[in-house]
Amino acid sequence: MSARSAVTGLRRRRRDADRRFGVRLFASAAVSAVAAVLFGLLLVLVESGWQPLRRLDAGAARWLNRTALDHPAWTGTLRFLSDVVWDPVTLRAAVALLTLWLLYRRAWRLAAWAAVTAVAGGLVGLLAKTVVERARPSLPDPVAHAPGYSFPSGHAMAATTSFAVLLLVLLPLVRRNLRPLCWAVAVLSVLGVGFTRIALGVHWFSDVVGGWTLGLAVVALTGWSFEAWRADAGLGRTEMAEGLEPELSGEDPEADGAVADGVGRREA
Image 1: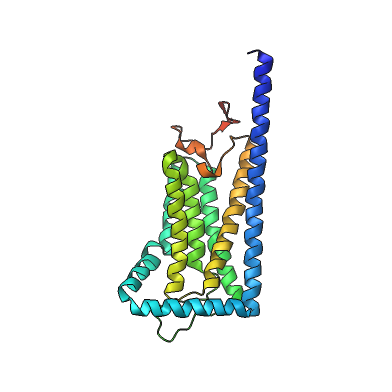
Image 2 (image 1 turned 180 degrees about the horizontal axis):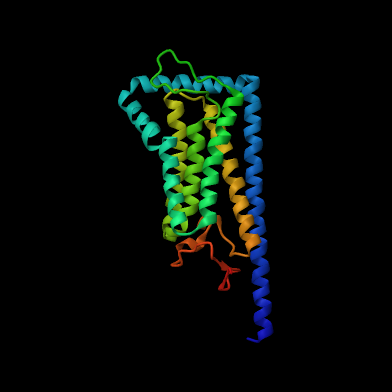
């Protein structure tokens, strides 16, 4: 193969990589926009008291409350999952420990992304609750109680942002054939958090959907920003299924000193 052919091939691969990277950046921005629009639409429906949504919320709350009253052992399991395993404090503590580990690995920007995503999610959710001031479900025979306002669900939002951070940071350390399992565990956990909050009667169905969509918007926006930084820094392109920083799996602890353009050039 001639030198000219090799250079032409390299340029073609870089153009293809740039094109794929642009598509991923656009997709991240689109997901953020769609999630924000869906949350805004849901907020309008909640604030206006749209009857179909109110009937859906009330029907789900009544049915799950009756089920919880008929199965006290099942209810105890839901309380344990909601208040211990999937509690926002537990999940944010996991993200905090992960951030400290990233700092130890000198992955400064990835640590900043993890911390900003978690903190932004908590603050945005708290702000939304304060603005909307929606009351929690009031059931004749409640099986659980929770303080504060209802919309959006803080548990659902914390689960969305926390599991996204854990997944997108740690995926490069997981064997490729096990990554679909990690995605499945994360998705099922986020869905499970929402179910426990509705089943325990401390949130409406729309509260949980609001927490999911707002959390997704935060993750998509910060993830898009991180990907844009990688592009500006000239670092290697990533696939979302492989995590935000594939270089984290290498032996070099300076994960931010990534291989640029996939051709072995270290960032100075």
